[in-house]
Image (tube, rainbow, N blue to C red; front, top):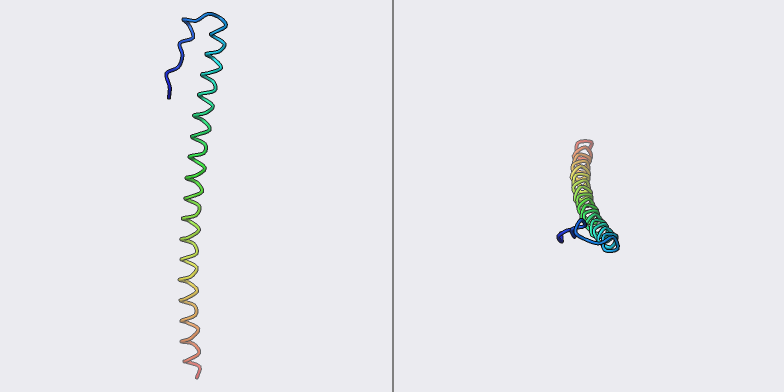
Length: 75
């Protein structure tokens, strides 16, 4: 983060400008942090979804194996 402008050492007109600049900088940082968080959350969600799909696929495979075995046993 850039150094905050020292507000005490300025005239009133400059004080207002500095306050605005500082607020803008803060808002920028906040937006960046939010975007980063959102990106990470998206990644984590995608990972979780992948894992879920894998687990489902494994279960489905196991089921089909069982079904095949059951058919064999019936004959």
